[in-house]
Length: 381
Image 1: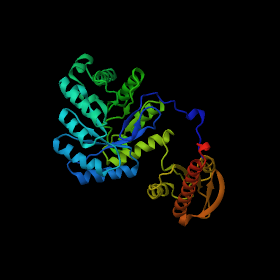
Image 2: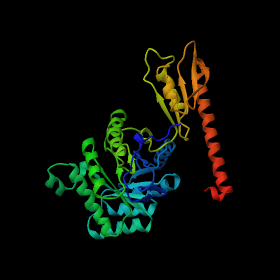
Image 3: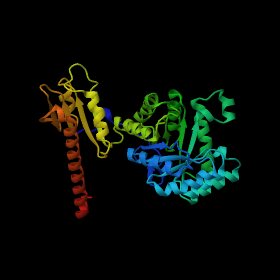
Image 4: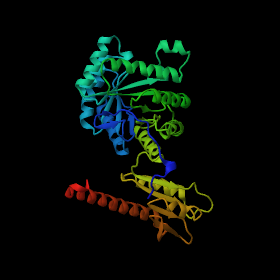
């Protein structure tokens, strides 16, 4: 139903395109959603299970910590058993980076300046190049280099950007350009300012995030403010919502942010009212149940659930399927913005789920028919 209107247009920053496995990052690629496992990497089964939950939630890229040799050994099995490109999180020991590249990591999260002498950096870069790994330079306000803290007195946007560009130059000096950069901080103002400054002075793809954002609720709010601000301005090629919560929750919030800005579309987007005394049914309970029942839907679709006729018809104009609360135990169902039929209150959730599934089937069938037509008629491609 919805189409992009002039006031909804986001002009994305032009950046170079790199690849994390088969996922394009930067250029004209969609903003990808990342998360990170919080299991011990040596717990292979637990880590794989966590990644699979994130995959069901729609994750594009998953980061796995590799603090020791046992973890990089486990990484090989993990990479083989999952469908998502894996980023190996490396901090100081250059051998872990080499081992992770050999184990099949699609990307290495390192800061080249922390690896040590030039020969070690060269070995890591060569391993990345030989095994088709990209690199993420991960600058964090909580672990800035000593000379930058002495120069600026405290972590600030300028220090984050200077650190990022110093690390980038090391890779560029080795003629390695398959890298992206993050300049994260837990302070929303600092992180946003750092990314804005970095976006203006380079064309490297940017991984955006508000680090250590907090609990599910507080962290979601902070991330929505910071990442929403950047994405709205066109800044950001891949993103992670950092929550003290299961990884799949980070993925769901990330998708919700992107869907709210019209940058990605996946699954059912529910527009619902906060409810009031005018409601013809329990809106809060209905929406919560529908979110659970419709999690399996991957095809983009909009659904409005409005408790009364004040705003219901208007919202239904802009959604694929709409529901407005009515009287005498019956509610109005809209299809493509027009009144379609009424339904009984006692079976409304099952009825809505059935309508959504039928609509999705029709969309997918039309898409498949269109693809078949392209194959049969090359001139249509």
